[in-house]
Image 1 (cartoon, rainbow, N blue to C red):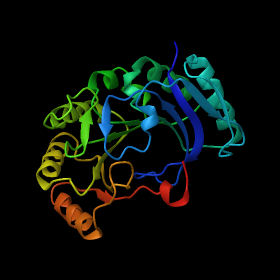
Image 2 (image 1 turned 60 degrees about the vertical axis):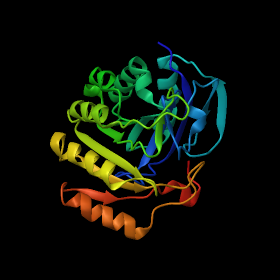
Image 3 (image 1 turned 90 degrees about the vertical axis):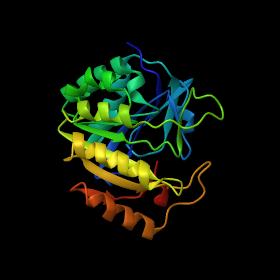
Image 4 (image 1 turned 180 degrees about the horizontal axis):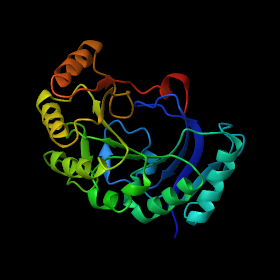
Length: 259
């Protein structure tokens, strides 16, 4: 089985409750959403070439090669970095990795067989794909997308936004079978209280024990500013009235130039 691969590299987790932990990132190509703040737009379409970091891990020295290697080739490339340095997790990310569910399942199985913990980073919409591989995942880190800033790639230009709540709720019902689940809401100045309240109510109904992260947007691309501290603190207080574990965690890697 082939994998459409963008890159493999070692860094630290830059967001969420595992921030700062050493992580090997395996980024797959292709995404069916268009987020206004996306900092990896090169992963929206299937990759044409892939880059794989050379040892030592974190060197920033990459070999460029085939964007469609076999699963065994990806596992071998990951193994060389994992053998050189212990990592807390291997993150299967994108793009949207669940557009390649067979590849994700095969990679997760192979990596777990060598003792690795698997962190799946996903936009949280493909519940059926997740159901077929959830038993191989240690942490599901899903976004709960807000229609104020996110569109589907195939939405007609100028079409009114359609929310993602129903599909996210179905996805979370599957994700809660994993040992840990993180639900992240990226908050921009356009994010409305009503859409956040709806997301929170559904999370509380399906999986109130999930880690819930309110992430103030990092300005990038079309998004030029972030919500104020007052706004984020007010939102945290609002959400904590419904859910027990709510954290405000900005992205950290842009502050020090990390990947």
